[in-house]
Length: 210
Image (cartoon, rainbow, N blue to C red; front, top):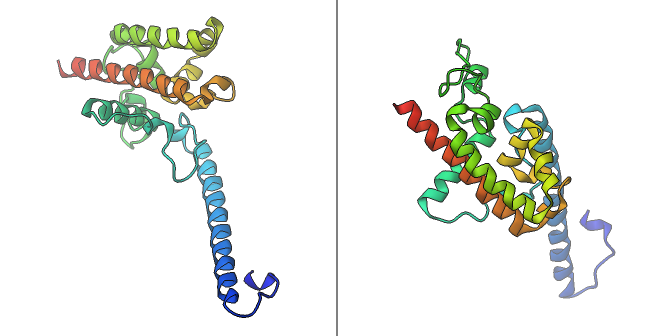
């Protein structure tokens, strides 16, 4: 590749030209590697059910929006970790236990004991977690209504799958809701949804410990 360039001038400038060619070659190789890695990551994400709720629209070398704008306070880090586990389906709900073990697992919700414990049930419908759920959803709905219009929140919550994807990673709906591209809006939604996920987790933990 280096030899495809025109012959450099003689003298001291020849070394400088060679260095520039080497730098260009390195830059090109890095770009190809990044493109290939991103393509492979996207391809794997399509096949992996554990990444279905995670937006992969992030450049290599930058933090995912999940980890951005997090205070270093211990409680904020715990909230982010809890949400990360929910997003990647490594959080312990019965349906996940059943899907990732060879043993027979009761998929009934371990909190209410009446429904199949899926992410949708845990985040939106578990009757034992409704106080925490409705309190936080109301705050999220108020903020969404402020930056968009009332029908937007109705659109998001009309479908359980879409609502859960939004709560776990609002970046998933950037194409539908362009205003989310504005960083302050996205960070505030991330903050509100982290609170929701952590409040549900904390209440669930208390109930299971009784």
